[in-house]
Amino acid sequence: MKNRSLVSINDYSKEEIIRILDLAEEFEKQPHQHILDGRVIASLFFEPSTRTRLSFETAIQQLGGNVIGFASAASTSVSKGESLNDTIRMVASYADLIVMRHPVEGSARFASEVSRVPIINAGDGANQHPTQCLLDLYSIRKTQGTLDNLNVTFVGDLKYGRTVHSNVIALSKFKTKFHFVSPIELKLPSAVKRYIKEAHLSYEQYTDFMEVIPKSDIIYMTRIQRERFPDPLEYEKVKNAYVLENAMLDNSKDNVRILHPLPRVNEISTDVDANPKAYYFQQALNGVFVRQALIATIMGVK
Amino acid sequence: MNKKRKELLVSAISNGTVIDHIPAENVFQVFKILSLDKTKHQVYFGTNLESKKYGTKGIIKISDTFFKEEVINKIALVAPTATLIEIRDYEVASKVSISIPSKIEGIVKCFNPNCVTNMEAVKTKFEVLFDETGEIKLACHYCEKTTSKKNMTFFM
Ligand SMILES: [Zn+2]
Image (cartoon, rainbow over all chains, first blue to last red; front, side):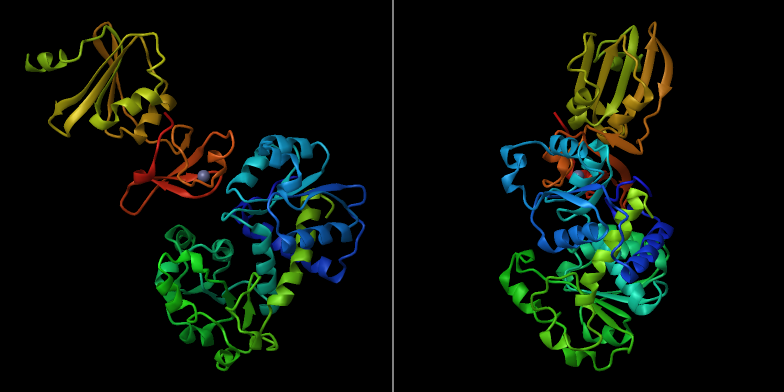
């Protein structure tokens, strides 16, 4: 894993995922370690994402590393029309590792092929966001004590939600029982279901949210965006059908935890926040430890 | 005798390659994929010819040219039914079967407009997959989206 780019969660085997999660546990106990002293890590955000950028940069600085880069492409040579190829080659001559976020799908894979230093994909358009996936897996394992044989329910936009796709692909390595709750129009694509079938696992699909709540160990909520519906009336019909309210958790298991990649809009009612089953804010914090584990592994210092 | 006459619809060649049973509508794509628009050798072709098996077909004959297997497999995308014969001294020297390669580089565009291959100077790369009906589809190495047969467009 040393010096290897992480572009897609598929780049890692089950064992490699577990190694990162185990190491992240160590960093959660001791996040301040001077193991990146003298190292330079580039943080290239070709599109702004404050949440992800702060998480990465905090992870790096707590380990004593130096950050160079930019928070948006507006003030850089990219806005003058420099190609991604040239930008990556230039930055790679200064940095030991590049963290990049880019609105174009496949940009991180391409960058990993032209860069002499490894790339961590912090999101390439609608394609992949593997560190979000790792932090979700970390959160699931931390709250359930295991990743194996869990009933995991995904709710909302399962068609376009890239975090859902990566999580399903990764959880297919862990004997998960999948439950998918969405409007018909936003069902999980067959290209993703293929991974479940190849792992000989089962899944169930629902349009009704209530019936699946008592079965779930994890409820992973996502936002349904208005622009996904060509017909605004169709959106109006479904927009409230997949909102989680506190009273709906009355018959849920004690161990169930509610996850969400954030930011949330209205798909989780604020009355859930005080419920101990709500885990989405802690989930986001786990991102720092997972990113520390990933960077330390790729840099070969752990 | 009858067979001989039919052959004459497109001139015979003494040495080279004959690609037969090309879907008539894809003859020019085969031309492009094999870079026949740039060759210095003699090329004969026919299209919308009668075919017992397929209704209509196209045929291309290229003099003094023999193709490597990995080159010829590229036409499998547009002409999976094609047959290929190598001619030496007016005799059929060998018949080559065309098989669909497991990887495709260049030739086809990625269907996803937001793919890096449509934004930067990057050659497309695909893994060849098949859908439930056995129809070919291409998984992009970069954006990971699949391009189905009906959405395939070729670099021209
Ligand atoms: Zn693509």
